[in-house]
Length: 94
Image (cartoon, rainbow, N blue to C red; front, side):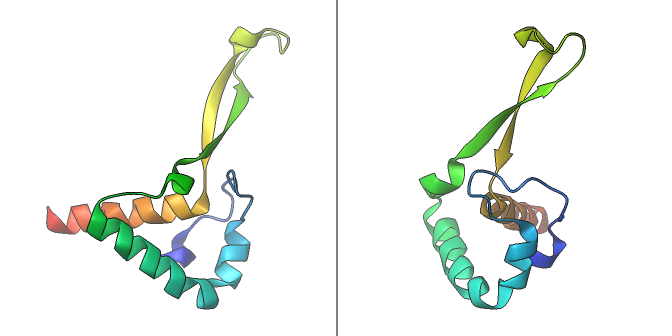
Protein backbone atom coordinates (compact mmCIF):
# COMPACT_ATOMS: atom_id res chain seq x y z
CA UNK A 1 0.00 0.00 0.00
CA UNK A 2 2.92 2.36 0.70
CA UNK A 3 4.28 1.88 -2.80
CA UNK A 4 0.91 2.85 -4.32
CA UNK A 5 1.08 6.38 -2.85
CA UNK A 6 1.64 9.14 -5.38
CA UNK A 7 4.98 10.91 -5.04
CA UNK A 8 3.58 14.13 -6.48
CA UNK A 9 1.22 14.85 -3.58
CA UNK A 10 1.99 17.40 -0.88
CA UNK A 11 3.55 16.08 2.31
CA UNK A 12 1.02 17.53 4.75
CA UNK A 13 1.49 18.86 8.28
CA UNK A 14 4.32 16.51 9.34
CA UNK A 15 6.45 17.19 6.24
CA UNK A 16 7.10 13.49 5.69
CA UNK A 17 7.37 13.01 1.95
CA UNK A 18 6.17 9.89 0.18
CA UNK A 19 9.69 9.29 -1.16
CA UNK A 20 11.04 9.19 2.39
CA UNK A 21 8.23 6.87 3.48
CA UNK A 22 8.89 4.57 0.52
CA UNK A 23 12.60 4.49 1.32
CA UNK A 24 11.94 3.60 4.97
CA UNK A 25 9.02 1.23 4.36
CA UNK A 26 10.97 -1.78 5.66
CA UNK A 27 11.51 -0.30 9.10
CA UNK A 28 8.22 1.62 9.34
CA UNK A 29 5.80 -1.01 8.05
CA UNK A 30 5.57 -3.01 11.31
CA UNK A 31 4.90 0.00 13.62
CA UNK A 32 2.39 1.41 11.12
CA UNK A 33 0.71 -1.99 10.82
CA UNK A 34 0.31 -2.17 14.62
CA UNK A 35 -1.03 1.38 14.76
CA UNK A 36 -3.53 0.78 11.97
CA UNK A 37 -4.70 -2.58 13.39
CA UNK A 38 -5.28 -0.95 16.77
CA UNK A 39 -7.17 1.87 15.08
CA UNK A 40 -9.39 -0.55 13.14
CA UNK A 41 -10.12 -2.74 16.16
CA UNK A 42 -11.06 0.17 18.44
CA UNK A 43 -12.77 2.24 15.75
CA UNK A 44 -10.77 5.32 16.72
CA UNK A 45 -8.32 7.32 14.63
CA UNK A 46 -5.45 8.93 16.58
CA UNK A 47 -5.86 12.69 16.97
CA UNK A 48 -2.43 13.32 15.45
CA UNK A 49 -3.67 11.83 12.15
CA UNK A 50 -6.59 14.26 12.07
CA UNK A 51 -4.32 17.30 11.82
CA UNK A 52 -4.24 19.05 8.44
CA UNK A 53 -2.38 22.03 7.06
CA UNK A 54 -4.79 24.47 5.42
CA UNK A 55 -3.36 26.37 2.45
CA UNK A 56 -5.08 29.09 0.40
CA UNK A 57 -5.20 28.47 -3.35
CA UNK A 58 -5.78 31.35 -5.76
CA UNK A 59 -8.86 30.83 -7.93
CA UNK A 60 -9.15 33.83 -10.25
CA UNK A 61 -8.97 37.59 -10.41
CA UNK A 62 -6.83 39.83 -8.29
CA UNK A 63 -4.46 38.09 -5.92
CA UNK A 64 -4.95 40.92 -3.41
CA UNK A 65 -8.58 40.01 -2.62
CA UNK A 66 -9.14 37.34 0.00
CA UNK A 67 -12.39 36.28 -1.69
CA UNK A 68 -10.40 35.07 -4.72
CA UNK A 69 -8.85 32.23 -2.68
CA UNK A 70 -10.22 28.91 -1.53
CA UNK A 71 -8.81 26.75 1.24
CA UNK A 72 -7.50 23.24 0.73
CA UNK A 73 -6.40 20.97 3.54
CA UNK A 74 -3.24 18.90 3.18
CA UNK A 75 -3.52 15.65 5.11
CA UNK A 76 -0.58 13.64 6.34
CA UNK A 77 0.75 10.67 4.39
CA UNK A 78 -0.19 8.40 7.29
CA UNK A 79 -3.78 9.61 7.18
CA UNK A 80 -3.90 8.85 3.47
CA UNK A 81 -2.62 5.34 4.17
CA UNK A 82 -5.23 4.61 6.82
CA UNK A 83 -7.98 5.98 4.56
CA UNK A 84 -6.87 3.71 1.69
CA UNK A 85 -6.77 0.70 3.98
CA UNK A 86 -10.24 1.44 5.35
CA UNK A 87 -11.56 2.01 1.83
CA UNK A 88 -10.22 -1.39 0.74
CA UNK A 89 -11.82 -3.08 3.74
CA UNK A 90 -15.20 -1.48 3.10
CA UNK A 91 -15.12 -2.30 -0.63
CA UNK A 92 -14.18 -5.93 0.01
CA UNK A 93 -16.97 -6.19 2.59
CA UNK A 94 -19.57 -4.77 0.23
